[in-house]
Length: 269
Image (cartoon, rainbow, N blue to C red; front, side, top):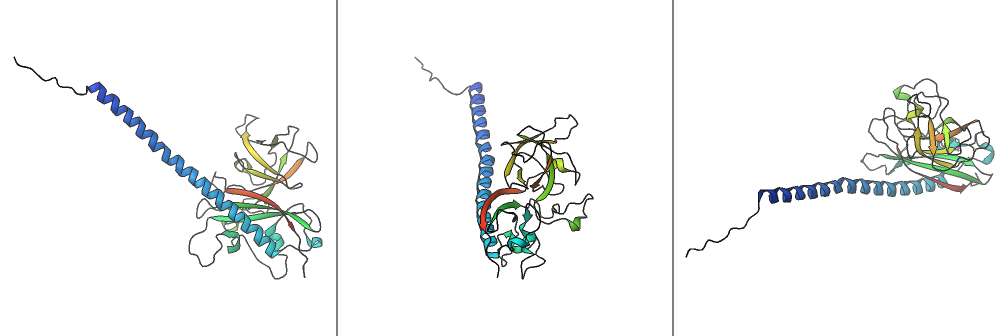
């Protein structure tokens, strides 16, 4: 009697199912890498932001402030403006290496991180300092000047690094909404996105934009929805806020972190 050995194998359907499952697994694994890279970049940038902010506060303490009676007649003022009023300081601008991170003059590496600060005098002895740590998203990008001008500035007069600018926003009674009602540069609608930080010029409080909305149906996202309620000094009026707008022609928010601290006004010699 002749016996035949039975041959076992995979059918075409089984092979196709196995291949499909393997393909889905590989796709899922591949999707993990971009997420991991993004999370690593965010963590690294937050660490850099914290270190750069601490370094900025240390430098501001070292350089000091003008005497209380010599402060400009403003609610908030850029530290750069104050620094240029101190004895022995003049013509310091945003490109000064001490405003960059890392500020090592001997390094040939191109810097992409920068800090600037706002100062609000609380008393004759204390100053509230708000430090913005920012990134430069492209080598040749330009940023708006803090000097308000109704006409666009030529490229050679714009700032090479991000810096805070002031603009008016209207409060109309809703505690979580502010509106863009006056255009000074013409493209203020592009200044704001989710995560944008506002600094109230009068109180120095920080407000975070949760989203922007077009409530008029005209295609312009003029309403800023805040993450926390706004505390206005007086309802129904325009108030001034500091914000760091994106680079000219860029939609990316350049702000890495915003930190605040109260520093003493050291007596001047």
